[in-house]
Structure formats: structure tokens, C-alpha cells
Image: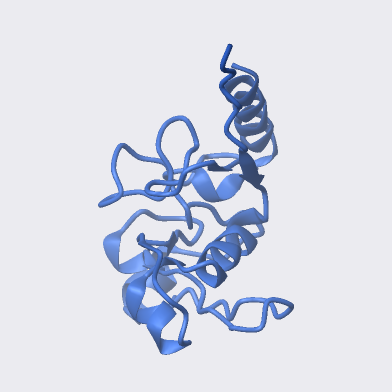
Length: 157
């Protein structure tokens, strides 16, 4: 009798910037950024950062820049001043960024699917604030706990 072995599932919980950094170091992310650091592109996905306070397209900056040293923190530049007048009036930075690996139905618009699986990568899920598709009107603590509970349900079947 043949037995089907379970798929090894990994769950990445590095936080908004840490999860994006781990993906990029693994060759998953914006191709131009990866190639700039001589990292082979395994899966091209769009990683983003939403500053706290607005959803205006000008305020949605590219994700933190990669540092090829796995022990180094990413270079975080949310480009708050790309449109200085608008952004100074409508945004502020807070301790609760979200959305670098946002959830969505396809790889063209998101990094993870509704089951928290990374698009184009078998056996990898993300369960932290990076999957939130947009800003919420409160601290992210409760929302992150809900994401973690959902990830546990998905993993346990």
C-alpha cells in the first residue's frame, strides 16, 4: 500500500519588513531589486509598503530595499516625500506598517493568496502583518492574532 507523504509547509512570520527581506534573499520579489544584488529571481512578486494614514497611490512606496547580507536589516525608505505637499498633509509614520506581502487573488496584485500561501512557491505561507492588504483603523495586534489563528486552522486542515 502506498502512502502519500504530507507536503512540508513552512510559515514565515518575520514581520512587515523581515518577511519581505527573507523572501527577497530567497529570490522572491521584485526582479530589478534582486538582480541589482546578484540574487537569482525564483519568483517575481510585488512587495510594497503602506505608510500609516492614507491609501493614496503616491503614498504607497516600494518595499524596503534589500541588503544582501542575511544578518543585516533591510534599508527602509517609505518615500514619504515623493509628493511632499500631499504627504505632509495626509500621512504620518507609526509603529504599525502593513502590506509588504499583501494578500490577494493573484500574483499580479499580491504576494500571498487567501490561504496565506506565497504565490508561485509550494509549501510556504506567511502569517504576520505583512499580509494585510490595507491599513486598518486600529493597532494591528488583534488583526495579527486573527491572521495567526487562521494560519493554524489552514495548517491543521
